[in-house]
Each structure stands twice: as structure tokens, then as C-alpha cells.
Image (tube, rainbow, N blue to C red):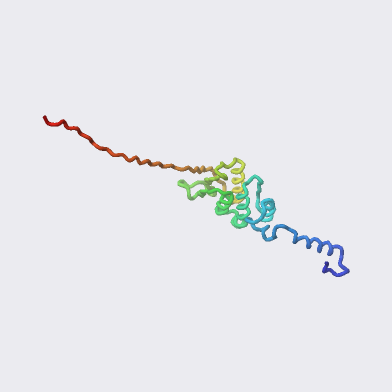
Length: 181
């Protein structure tokens, strides 16, 4: 049943037919704009919409969702030290950033040291391509006039086991005396 008047144009009829099919979309539209609820196959389109500078289909799903989640805060702070920290955190890493005036011996102006620690998913070390992607994003978000020295940190986890054993023992001293004659 159409609500259009009898003199509706072909364009209006085509628009009515297209809008009628919107209810058949399996995902609610509001979920498409949520990094947590958006289907994985549509995340690249959401990243494009939010103006992410880079995207890789090789990234783990958690990294993809975090990159999309942090897109707006990173764009707001682009060109600051905070944006560099946000970018590294969106890739699931931690960073120690020391600017030239914070070093033991002050360095050249507008330089900083970046110590980057990235953890792989499930204990698997990250690939060199993944580290290169993080460095490329740091280049895009750092202040344009600044240069940095990169050091890759390594974080290892292990466990220490402690075992204790109790062994009860009873000692009795027996002495034999010869009878007196």
C-alpha cells in the first residue's frame, strides 16, 4: 500500500521502494556507529567515516575496535604528546615518552624519546609490520616540527612456583645397658 498521491513521479516511487526496504536491514543503524556493536566486516567503513589515517585487515579485532573508539580523541589532540600516547594505547601498547627538556642531559629542542612496549594477542609477539604501523601512526600524530628516537621495549611474563614438603619423623634414642654382675 502506497501513501503517495496518484500523480507521484517515478523518482518518488523509487525512493518509497528504497525506504521500504530499510526495515529489512539486519543491523540497527545506531549499532553501525558504535565501535563495540558494529559488525567486524563493517568496521573499515566506520574507520573511514571517522577519518582514521590508516587501516589494516591484519590487525586483531580488539585493535581495530580500539582504533575506531579512539579516532575522535586522537584527531582532537593531533600534534600533541598526548595524541602520541593515545595512538600507542589504541594499538594495545604502552609508551614512555620523554621530551627533550625532560632528559638527564637536555637534548635538541623539539625532540623526544619514545620507548614503546607492544604485547601480542595470546602471548604471541607482535610482527615487525605491526610495529611499523604503530610508528607510522606516531609520525602522523606527533607535532610536525618534532623528531623522535624510537626504542622498542619488551615485556615478558612468567610465574614463579614454590613447593614445600613436610616430612614428619619421630626419633627415639635407645640405649642398652649391660646388667650389673
